[in-house]
Image 1 (cartoon, rainbow, N blue to C red):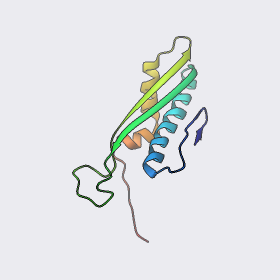
Image 2 (cartoon, rainbow, N blue to C red):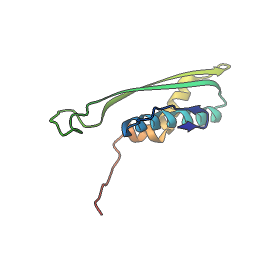
Image 3 (tube, rainbow, N blue to C red):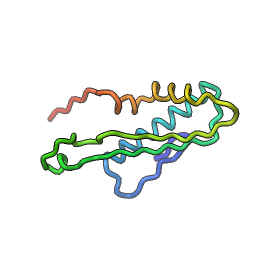
Length: 115
């Protein structure tokens, strides 16, 4: 998957959870780039990594006290800029404006129906 100013590379056997992780990184990348433009920050490089734990037991039909999805995510951003940038303010704005991380971090209603 390619974002405007970055690239996300996956293997041939990508599962839906990995697509979700890629969406988180892709949205943080594009939002970070947009916020930097709005704040007149010249980003030289932006790298993002994500880690998360999944217990597939419930998905596989086994008993588990864990939820069937991700148990949590840790995202790390590494940013190099030209000049003296207020990266704390930048990160705060990125976290506030990123729609995918908002949906992951906060409860989002979902209605699944059978036609």
